[in-house]
Image (cartoon, one colour):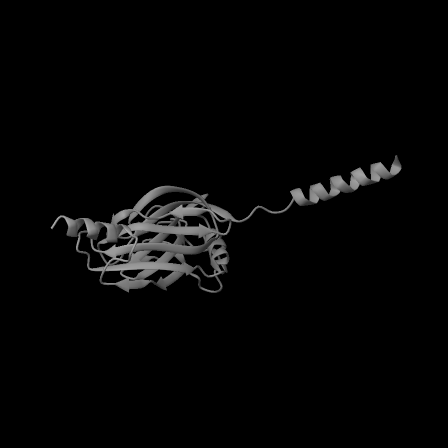
Length: 205
């Protein structure tokens, strides 16, 4: 009887320890898709998080920064980005682009710096932004503190490595989670929305 009690106690202790493991890091964010170089058509753009979930950032026709916005949701640490898009809004487009790339492993550390950056500004949510400029793709994370409306003073020693920078047009503060260049083509990549569009246009000529 005593052995069974000891065994039950061990099981309870192990279960308790397993139950106390920390939750994976995640944030509540709106999703934004924009550009700093004019008109683009983004029909496919997704970010995969550490947990394996995928978030859709494709907002169709975009032209400015921060760009088109959706309500988003809760997302874990981003680890991979995939997408294809075109420069311009109408067929024939100026150029076609695609990317499939790993997001650097320091993304979580950068996001946590942004979370704890401000001295007085507090927010439970932020924004994740995918910005396309021709073949270039950047992923920003921001807490959306705007000097016009809030005190955006940085906390002392909150960013010793100078990871936080000003966003395009000095709108707010961001950390850059990804900055890369995709492939470029003068014709649509196969098996994409743009190749299907081109086939339809040619068939109607």
